[in-house]
Length: 166
Image 1: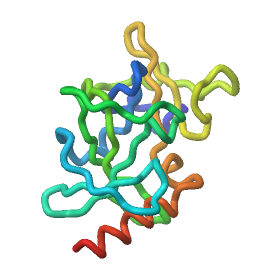
Image 2: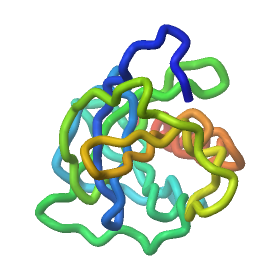
Image 3: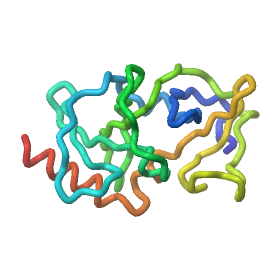
Image 4: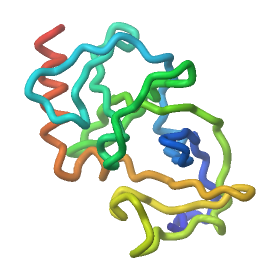
């Protein structure tokens, strides 16, 4: 995943089941403690709830489920990362659950590589690249694809429910 401009990539790193993931920092709007979640009937497990973020109803996604992990277990470190993701050409605000949020950091462009075709636990198309920071690998997620591939209707259902709750 070489960046066109050759610049380092600023990311927010967070943990899911002991793995370190990252999203581009420019997409992050805020980080919240886990708040009350309203279930959305008949929704898919990946985006099954709504949260209130400063008076705005926002769909909440559990990446654990999207990646085939066990659903999250709430702890004192659980956070909601509120991000903006382009869906169908429109910026869409969503929350994602993180077991723990680590830091905003830079990944050196030269350290970011394409995801290999084999040896991954997750679908390759969900990964923008894999970076190395110190001795750890950081999996940079392609949030647009995660939300668009096969589950676009899930986010749309949650947004529709949010409008009905307004």
